Image (cartoon, rainbow, N blue to C red; front, side, top):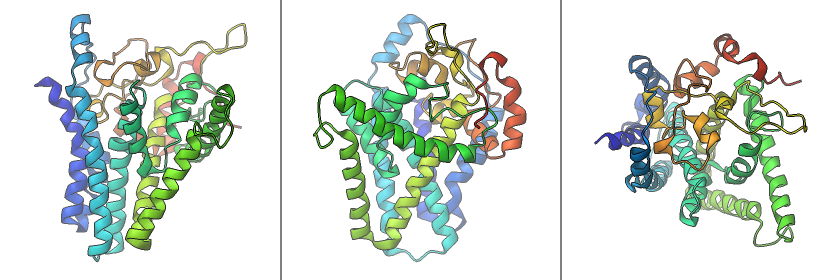
Amino acid sequence: MKDLKYVAALSLPASALLAFLLEGPWSYATPLYAFVAIPILELLLPHDTSNYGPEEREEKNNRKLFDWMLYVNVPIVFGLLWMLLQKTQNSVLETYEWVGLVLSMGIVLGTNGINVAHELGHRKSRLHRSLAKLLLLPSHYMHFYIEHNFGHHAHAATKEDPATARLNQSVYSFWFTSVFRQYANAWRIQRKLLANAKAGFFSIKNDMLWYTLFQVSYVCAIAYFFGALGLSVAFFSGVVGILMLESVNYIEHYGLLRKKTASGRYERVREVHSWNSNHVMGRIVLYELTRHSDHHYKASKKYQILDYHDISPQMPFGYPTSMVLSFVPPLWFSIMNKRIPKEMRLSPAP
């Protein structure tokens, strides 16, 4: 029964379903749940720093139940998106209701969409990676697969990494620098991959070209079938999903810096180069993303067996609560800056 705790990750889509069905003030059910109710629960519930033993870890690693808990997000995400698009044809709502519904859908796209895509994108099978890219589609962020796997994991906690926030950089500044630098970086990585494969720009191996084609086709199809309102709702829901991801990126490595060795290369990524949180609510609803230190230390590990390490820098709050705090930069700086080890501080952006 304990393994079923990750069903709680579906509470976010459930809150979005409630928003879609009840409308009115209920349109804001998901943002209120994500950024008010969950932070309160994180303050009330205990931390869990326990790790599995070798035998139990092996058993958890091989249980298909944990994979199916990821797969179920695909029909849920696209089912909710379909419901919302249908509303653009069948419902007459006030502007404030549309804003609430877009926020609710966008949060689901960021958590049960991009976050699950992140987990599946690290798997080896073609099915898992295909599902990852499919879940990235409605957030207009398919290039994340290339940049994250070939860029971020190589350069995390360095000045070269677009997804590592500098000391005293606000989350709002980070949204812009990370989004645009990651996209440009994805193309640079793609060009290197094509060069290594001795393939040209218009090669079938140019994934970035395929991603562009898929995303343009997705937007055009929505515009054709659901009109301007449907296009606006789908587009801005995707933007909210992106901002959810980038807010998480912001808190995951904020202010941390890997040292350079005598050779001029950075030291390898270790458990100390990501912020960790053991707050149980955030761990469950984000499929253990909050044990990010271990994820970067061993990126191939599945979410259900990620470990806690004593040497990892610890966040005073869970990831959902930390995201809320980051929206108030002076408060965030006052809490987090003093927690950054002096020898690891990533200097402010010029």
